[in-house]
Every structure is written in structure tokens, then in C-alpha cells.
Image (tube, rainbow, N blue to C red):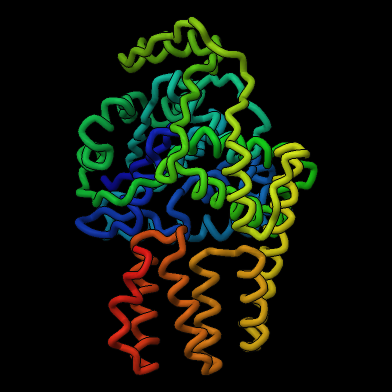
Length: 433
């Protein structure tokens, strides 16, 4: 009998790393469902939730009801077409938001596959309530929360529908803490029976200083969600904050466990977890916990340096939130430029694309992709020296990962070859590494 493995989370248990590792698997009878998203939360929640029109993913981007329904139909078609392929013995689906479906919706999800003659196996990973609450607060901040809050992991509610719809014997539950001891991806490989490749770790924690700026962003007056352009600016500024105020740049490791972040209602769920799955966690001991007031601000000197990177002055005489609001306005402008550039590229107006790219860089857009666009346009317009200069900046941009840096080095080497400067290539591509 063919089967479907549903990895349903829970959240903050290495799901992003797992999703990176199972992405595009199609061998030995195993296949990952071919949604465009690595995280299948978005398609699966959109298909099976009755509350899909209020799903935060679509609300953040400003999608209207018709657009969301269109996405639902698109995802349904992909899912139905994939599972009709009888050459596949086991389909893999990973999305932590499946644990956010209601009990009846989880049952419907199980029935969907059972009606099509699939055995459904559910993988559920749980995490200690103390570390979960700390990590979840970071995630909530990135999503827009204005302050620290107490968290209940609601272990039972996340899985109750799958227990009823698929049967207790088809639910495999694991402690996150045990899985990471021997390597999360190695452990998950054994659980599902597929050899997975360990990818660079995703979703690293923010630092103390970065979290302060994220909370400041969440408390500005200008909306940072609700439209594609607002949300794009929000995502960009979050990435810039995390990159600058990172541990690799000397900023402090975030220690939220000093706060009392666990909702006392978790006690009932811990009893249920032990009874049903033999998994034990202890309630936190409330000794010397601080109030839920977060005040780990960066120094004025660090803030000044951060703002200078975007051609702005940090003003100590006004609040951090007011300073961040000015910065967000700058990123809104950069987002507008990005969208305009896409339109101009479609119209093949290369000179206008280059002009706008230069304006964005002057306004503080230091992303490797922005330098690469400027380099590509300069090369197209036969401005080889400018193309090389921008390509060098793309190589050395701080937001590169290993793959993008390698791509930029290759691009730069080709430009140097065209310009007859191949002898300079080695030194140029290694500059700043």
C-alpha cells in the first residue's frame, strides 16, 4: 500500500532545516510533493483550512479573497496530479502549519489521502516548553509582535485531529532535544527511511540587539504588512537588521530564558503528553525571572554605524522606533525601485534600469543582487569598467551565502576576461573574502 508521510512540526523544531533537506527528493520510490515552496505549510494550510482567507501569509502580502482561492485551486491541482503517479511508493509533505489546523480539518486531511488508498504516517516533533517559548517569541517578533508574551505550546491541540483521523499507531512522536544530539537531519533520515543531505543550517537565532530593533520596527506607525510592497520592505529590513546585528559581528547571544515566558496552562498538556507518548518535560521553576520588559538596546555608536549604511543619520534625541520608522521609509523606497526595475526589464529599457539601480545603491541598497543587476546592465550597455566595479561589490557584499558568492566570482571572472584583464581576475575575486 502506498503511503504519505506528513511531517507536521511542531514549530521551532528544526523544520526549516528538514524542509531544505527533503526539497526535490525523487528517488527510490520516495518523492517530495512538488509545490514551489520548500515549506509545505502554505499550500497545505491553504488547501485544508476553512480559515484560509485569514491566513497570515496571504494577509501580510495583501492578497484578496479571489487571489487566495486561486492559490487554493493551484495547490489542489498540484497535489492531485502528483499523487496520481503510481510509480511513487511514498510521498513526503512537511509543513508545521498543518499542526495549526483545527481538529476537524486535520481529520479531513487524513481522510483526503485515505480515500485515495494511501496509508498516512504522521511525524510529530515536540520541544521543551521553556526553550520553545523563548524561540517562539523570536518568531512572533519577526511576525510583528510588539512585545514578549507568555506561550503555551498546546501539544495536544496540534495533533488531536491526526490521532483521530489517522490512528495513534500511525503517529510517531519525538523529542527535538534527542534528535539534535546526533544531528537532526541524520536522525530524521532514519525516521523516514531516506538518506538526506545536511544543508547549511537555516533560521539562525537573532541576537539581543537585533531583537530590540525588531520590536522597535513592530511599534512604528507605518504599516509594515498588508500589501506586497510593505511586506517586501519589512522582510528586507529584517534581513538587514539580522545581518548587521549578528553574533558573527560580535553582538550578544539572545537569552530569553531569563524571562518567565511559559503559560501555566501547559501543565495539563504535559500530563497528556506523558500519558499518550511517554514524553516528559518539567515545568519551569519560577526563580528570579524578570518581568516581560525587553530593553537590550544596542549602543548609540552601533546604531549610528548601522544607519550610515543606508545614508541616514541616527538621531539619539528621538526614540529608537522613530529612527526605525525613517529607515523603514527608506526601504519602502527601495522596494518601489525594485518593482519598477522589474517592469523596466520586461520593457527592455536597460539604461533606465541602470539609472534606478545606481539610485538604489546610493540610497544604501548594499545587497549582492542589487550590485549584480547594476553589473549586468552596465555590461549590456558596453560599460565594461562599470560592470567590473559593480561585480566586485557583488562578490564582497555581506549578505552573500557561499553559493551566491561563487556565482558572483564566476561572473566577475568572465567580465575580466572580456576586458582583457584576466591576469587581474584571481586577486579581484578574492578581494575582501
